Length: 121
Image 1 (cartoon, helix red, strand yellow):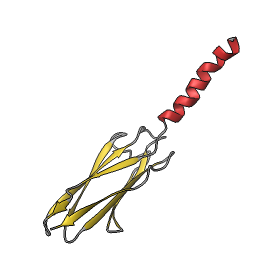
Image 2: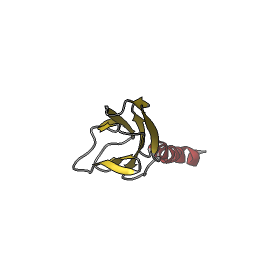
Image 3: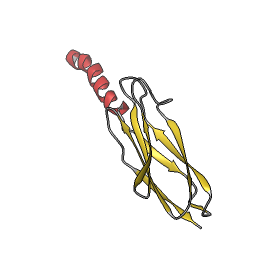
Image 4: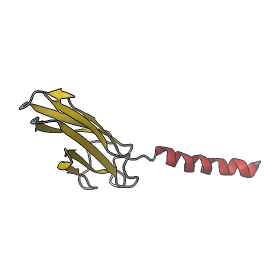
């Protein structure tokens, strides 16, 4: 029983580290439709538990119709503002726009790309 009590803190510590570890995830916010010729703001909400020189989001990109239009790079010298932060990009709607965004943690990787469409009216 005594050995079990001694091992319990180590087990808790090891399992909690895994629970705290996460991949960078993104959410795209933009209007679902817009009049052709209108400039819209695309907002990317980035979520990540960790923002230090050792553990942070190291990049986020935005693609429009399959072409990368913006890439934000971060490093231990140039950290994001916080673990969770927001990025903005302005674009003029000329036709339907397929938006894709993805972020990446320097240790745990990415939760995957997210996408949405802005319909041109």
